[in-house]
Amino acid sequence: MLEDKGWEDPRSVNSPRRILSFSKNRKATVFFPDPDDRDSGFGVSGDQGPKTSEVYGFVGSITTVVATGLAILIFKKLVLFLVWAYLPEHWLHSLGIVYYPSRYWALAAPAYAMMTIALAVGFYIGLNFLATPPPTSFSMIYDEFTREPLRNVPSTDNDEQPIEPISDIRIDQINVLMFNPR
Image (cartoon, rainbow, N blue to C red; front, side, top):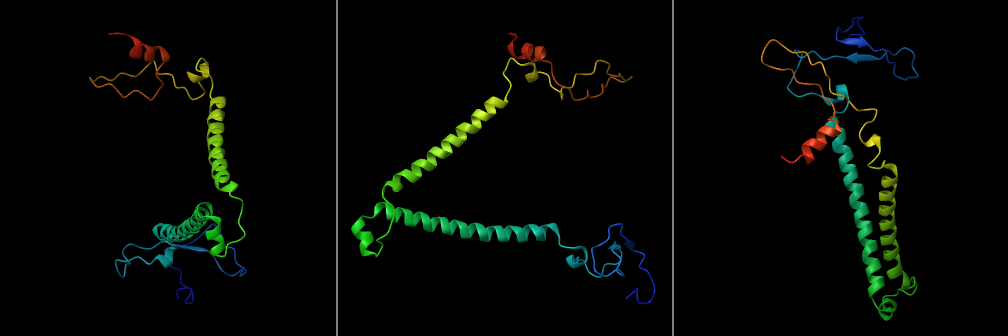
């Protein structure tokens, strides 16, 4: 409306970022609302894009629908597995189920799954032990992030002392505090 009359809105600014467009005549503008020009107490989210709470709500609702569908699918497969594993063969034949895997897999599949999980956890713990330096290594005491305490803390004229900057406690001080009998 303002562009038709040749006026420029004082609250719109040419943006340094151009919007990808096939039209060369369009300019990207940023609109800064004036707090005094409110028609009502409610903000319109269409002017400034979606609010983060709206985005989180949408993503959360889609995630809930997908997770519920997956949970139902897993539950159905679990029920079918238990029916196959525990019903006698003549009951399965009476239900019309004549083609099914060997009963060996009723015990083997859960056993393989549990051993795979146990080996993965053991492998993860072993990798952490390999990546950790030994307790006698100096890298356990000093590294590139170690901060020595400052020696010359400026004193003030008052009785108050400034708070010392953050620093690491030396290992000999820790040993004295922990292992020195009092």
